Image 1: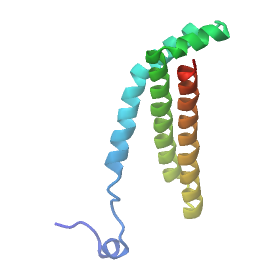
Image 2 (image 1 turned 180 degrees about the horizontal axis):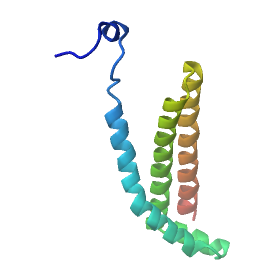
Image 3 (image 1 turned 45 degrees about the horizontal axis):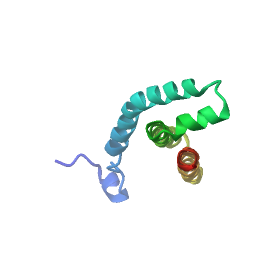
Length: 126
């Protein structure tokens, strides 16, 4: 049985079929942030107050570098997904919404790449 009205069927309104994937991705990134956040904060706190060389030594360790890179990538993806929902729900002008969604995606992906690059540069510098 089809529950769409004639207008919805003609106008193509209805489920975009993307909500479930977005929901699951948001929850998975939240779950992944728990251990990554704890490990990242533990490493970061250990580096506080140390000299420049000590901080470089901490993040040159492969485990610490991978935790930091993973944290940046997952955290900024989670942030992008959350802000996307807010923009979709509260920005009603179609043009403004599209511009904000594109800006949202570019900014947070850029920050994720910059964070990962910074840690990789520290980890791979001899």
